[in-house]
Length: 290
Length: 297
Image (cartoon, rainbow over all chains, first blue to last red):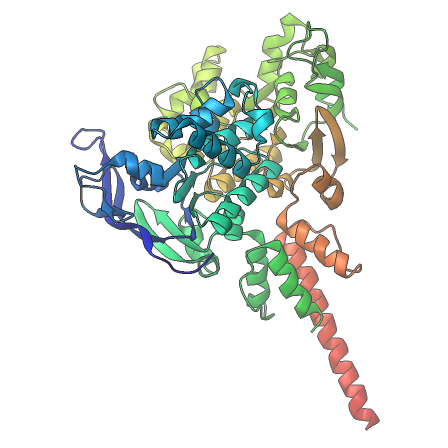
């Protein structure tokens, strides 16, 4: 989805310092500005240590800004001490890099129902939420709800962890390197599922990733973070049209984009920067047969 | 051909062999690795890649079958130390294998514990740090380095033991593109200097680096060959739910539309050359037919 809706998350010149006032202080964010619109898929990329995870932890109040800059989430100023952070965390769900480590209940169903239970939802509503969330991630409700969480495979654990967050029916879902270390099949399935949430249910998606091919294939817009600052932003096609700039920030472009760039540099004009193999195939086929 | 440095003979392995119906994480594995090889192992989660890696320096021993390292059997307790001096492993998360508070001390840790004399020790640390391009950071604290730098320190630490074989178990999966490139450069240099490399990876374009690729599925080796041989079997790999490098996938899709387009291209250079060759050829043919048309008039 690419229709510009309402701004749901807004960061303005955000600064953050870890261990502030101690000899170990680290300035993690030094001016991050970004806007995330309702219903879009936003990619956040940057080299390791650039500040990506620090940024997304501001989205649901795991880190509250006390320094320069403002964070507005769904109309709420996150610096407001009277803010109901729990309400924000229901709206903005965060999945970490090793989501399987977020599981703590013995049974799958209980683990997914934990959030709705804490929200005080009645049992029958909870059950429906769990059923819906499991369906969304592709786990069969009847056969999985009474399974032991520790007996699941890594990929299944990830699905349960994500279902636990979906059961809160968040408006925004943040995946912080959540596909790292899963094999291509597991990765593709997970991506298809969350993209479906975006298309069918309008859930805003924020992807933090260091896999350029993955980001290129799913993100509407991309922010590039380096050394705690926003250094580039634009549509995926605009961003991946600038390989030299990206390399300066420790990043790269998908191989198909690199192929297209080499061709146009050598005098074969390409109609666009291809982001996926299918796009590159289509463009090159036209050139070979024009 | 020279003698293999690692020979895996009909190896079966179960983490729990005593139960009635044991599950075998490795089944019927036969593999020979020769000095100077750069072997890449691919396969999805749970296919047995890491279990195989741990057999190569006696962290695990076969339930059935034998693993020979430089003529030593990993089942022979007396051989464990010399085997681990021959085969070094670098794991996925560098933080788990960094022990010291200064980079150069961390690199020196292994050989110092083996009693390598001071002068030799210094030479090895210098050499290892130079190969991974970390000598400028030798006095820094490892925990303040980036992940790519840490991973290179971990590799230097393994290298300082002068292993003949270096096993990298998904050592690049935590890194960003630049960090990944740094590590691959270091590994390439080592291989050129004669170290045998065995690399386990999920990134298919990294698999192109090797001279041999094996594909694992459900504890077995299901495909083996040069990267070009293995990756040109796009359908087989897809059936195993594995990716192929983007460039190969593109070449394969173009090959499906036009069978004269080669399906087995691996690198950006190769496919760019192929496309440019075809475009130039077409232009020439175009000029020729235009000229003929003109003369006929």
